[in-house]
Length: 287
Image 1 (cartoon, rainbow, N blue to C red):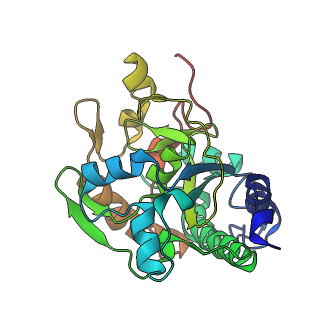
Image 2 (image 1 turned 90 degrees about the vertical axis):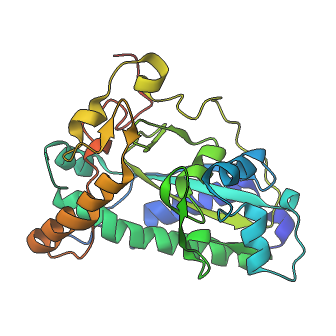
């Protein structure tokens, strides 16, 4: 396949076909259930001004698409305008969401399996897309898989990373942020995100929103706040939003211990604020 044959439709089909048909998309349970339902896909330009805004808000360490591309391919000489960020949303299955709705403090086993084995699939999806684009003659990289990726401290937001899959999805027209910092999409908030950056020119997805909180009932209408009630450690409030440190202490502390002891899976997670809420599976309607 030649580079000029790569289209948005080809990329979307590549992501959807791999998700729906790959044996890697599995919870690795006795029933062999899939980890993810059919994905959503969006695109944003490497020169989208939002990426500079992210950098200004998060910190100087945060990559724009052009910066990480230049670090990865220093001889390429690619401009931001030549790059496209390909972003996708992996929705949790109905069974996984239903299980987690019933939990009050720790994640369900299905949710835990999606956090562990589902993210392993997400890695395979990134690799598959990279290999397919490279075979088509396109230079591409996955920021999440880059050996250069690291954590840093943002003056505004505390512990942060050099790249955010959720921010790439927001820029690519796939969703806006909620009170708990989760991304609310057309498939809801019970999701995971992924992205790659490629030296191809694809038409950006139109963002159907102006505000980064547009889909959150609390920010848009002053209603809801159900994620506040769902949080088992009071890490979400209508006054301060999401307390990342409280959240991390639970998900990567007590919850991790619980998951390892009860399910035999060495991973962390929670997801209670993503389930049992109006934005779990959709852009919520007025309550």
